Length: 252
View 1 (cartoon, rainbow, N blue to C red):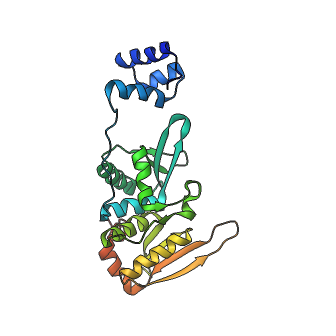
View 2: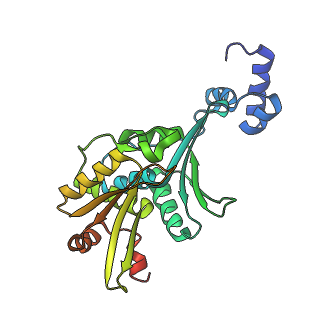
View 3: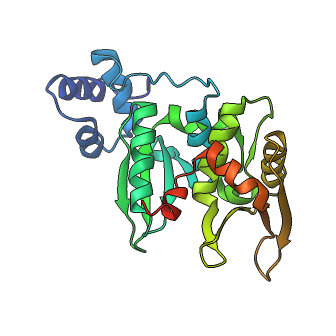
């Protein structure tokens, strides 16, 4: 910041005091937004209020983290100093996307925008360094290969958090569906993360739910870890976890 010439600094300050937006100043002067924001804070204070989102390991947090573990992504853009968090949905899942939008916006106290992608899928998005970092309290993953590297950081989590996590994950990377001419319901989890699959099974075991496990292998694809609830545990799971996808089998 100190390398800017005095005249440039004065120009930035003058524009800020005259109500010109950070975006416009950045574009007009060919300077990064972070540089303009540095002076904005000195003049007017923080533009965005600090979010109070320290972990409490509640059921709601579990669901929020489970959703991100299943269908979330994030990236940091250094040039614009932009931290972006996304949740991705299939184009048929708009009802669920709106549910997640309300859940995330309410919990984080920040606006999330829902976009239609060119491939007709949906994307829920926000920009926030604090929300970006929030998921790293709970999860370990390599952003570029999140789907196959994601895992929970610890097992020292509450039962409520685990129930929420199962709900968020089955609603994104799982299935709840009828089988045998709608006489029985099946519940499954899918992930290419070996470590997460073992953690999911450990959570199910701690809840005294029975399951089967197998791996699907296809050429040029990462191994898919499949966890399926045994029939005697399905009703208990649905009553305990109350997944959003269960609304489909109820006709809602």
